[in-house]
Structures are given as C-alpha cells and as structure tokens.
Image 1 (cartoon, protein in one colour):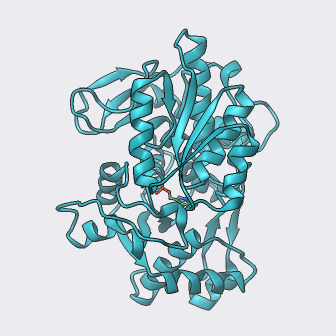
Image 2 (image 1 turned 90 degrees about the vertical axis):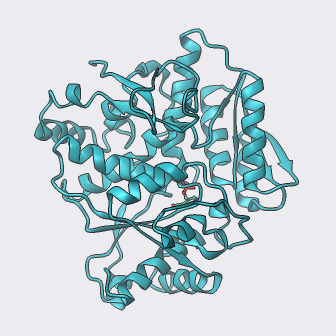
Length: 383
Ligand SMILES: Cc1ncc(COP(=O)(O)O)c(C=O)c1O
C-alpha cells in the first residue's frame, strides 16, 4: 500500500510540525495540543468517487485488517503503521439505527442513532485505542523503548486500553478515581490483566498524575490528549456519511466530557469535505451534564473565556470532567460547525433516557444527556 504522509502539528501554530514517529503529546514550542495532519494534496490524487469505492469495498469484509471500521480508512487515519503492527478487534462498522418510534414521539421523522458503543469493550473508545496501541507496536518495532501504556479513566478508556494491550502483549496501567467507576467497568481492566491504581481523587486529579508518571518513565500516555486517539474516533463521522450513502446529516448531537469525541467527529467531517466526498457540513451539538458543564458555561459567553470547574457527581459518570483536555480543539470545531452546546440536569437526563428505553432503545445516562439536548433544541424549534 502507498504510504501517505502525515505528521503531528500544533493546533496553534501550523508551522510547528513533528515527525509522526516521535513520542510527543504537546507542542514543545507552544505548549498546545497536537493534531495529526494528513497531506491532503497527496490524498487528493485519488478522486472522491474512488475513495468512496475503496471504503465501500472494504466495509465489513473479512480481509484483515480492512474490514474494521477504522482500518478500512487506514490511508486517512494512520498510514504510517505497517499492517503487521496493527492490533485490531474489528472495531467500528457499528449500526446506524433508525430511532423511528422515539423520533415520532418527538415529532422528528428522520432520527438516527449511531451505536458507537456496540464494540468489543462496550465503548467507542475502542476506535481510538486500536490506533494508539498499533502505533505503540510500530514505535517499539522502530526501536523505541516503551515499558507500558497508561491512562487516567472514568471507566471506558481503561477498559479499551487494557483490552488492546492484552491483545498486543503490552503492559497497561490505569489510574481510576476511587469509588467513581462502575463495577462493570472496573472488572474489565482487572480481567484484562492491567495494573489498576485506585486513587483518592477525581478524574481530573488522575489525569494530572498519569501525565507526570508518563513524563518521567518510559510509559506511553493513552489519554485523548494523545492525538492518535482522535484519528480513530474521527472514523465515526466518516462512517455515518458512508452509511447514509455518502450523504450528510443536518445535525449531529454528541455528549461531551473530555471533549475528544466532539473534536474527532468534527475532524472527520472536515476531512470528508476537504477531500470532496461531501459538499456540506452538519451542525454539531455538544451535550454536557449540568454537573460537569465547563464548555456550556464558555458557550454562554460566546467562547470568549474558559474556566475549568469542579465537576460534581452525575449519573453520566464518564463525562464528569471539569477540566477537559481537548477544550481548545472542541471550541475550534464548534466555531467552524456553527455549533451549539446544551446541558442536562440529572432529572432531565434520567427522564430522557427512560423515555428512550420505553421505545425499545435501552441506553446509558450519557446518551440521556444527548437526548435531553436534542429535545430542548426541538422544543426551541432550532432543530
Ligand atoms: C460513555 C461516554 N464517555 C465519554 C463520552 C464523551 O467523550 P469525550 O470525553 O471525548 O468528550 C461519551 C460521549 O459520547 C460517552 O458516551
């Protein structure tokens, strides 16, 4: 396969670029987050129709690793990884479900739910983790010394990290806030053989500690500050368009905590548009729990300022985050997509979630947050 070019680039300064084979999480010059930039001119040498055909030919097929929803788009995701270093559990290719009954109740006919959590570990985090762990295998094959891979987590990320490390034969270490992770999610890293550290702090506290540990040891950082994760997660938006026969939805609503996901979905849509596979962009909505709503507060003030806050307990425990790592990426994306931020109180998110359950769409409190945002925007006649 032709090896398309990509590199790390500061999100604040396009001239600050770094080799994709380096171990680097932030721009040493600007201190900002990095993103993986792809050589779009090189990718444009293939026509939009030909990309669509290639992706459609691979979709859900058994040819390893291209049947995976992530690796079927390898050229746009991580072209620098040799196939023999890919650690894939056939992630992605998740159902796009027509929520007809619930949509009719709300008065929105054409309502679809992308079931990103229908994945190996029960979370969309598998999409980013397959890329990150495959990149670690590539780095090791290229001579880098990496003793283990670590993350802070509210549950999902640790499940994904430990599963992919176990599959790759790598050691994993997870830092969890004590008593804030559900038993179902605590079981996964333990069963997958990770070293599990339970700390007397919240997610934001675990995030600080894991960064210090990774800075000092030869331990690789797997949180979404690591832009490789975003590359896998951006396939969600590419796949949504593919499932709509390369058409674009009008709105996409996503729950947001650390804000990697909203950044990733935006990046996928932009890449599709820049490479000519779609002609318009959707509007994006980021939905936050009222108890963990720093982006919502910033949105109310037109993103003129941002202040981290102390997130308090929410049923949507995976998004109980007051100091989101990807805040700047998320704000950039929301500005481009004429985005909206909404919030859901505990009562609202529980009610929305239960209402959807009663249409046969059993869902989690995070989805409840997105559903509340959707209902609020429909009631305001914005959607
Ligand atoms: C279970 C779960 N965790 C976390 C998130 C939020 O992702 P992020 O932390 O990247 O904002 C979501 C959003 O879909 C989610 O459903």
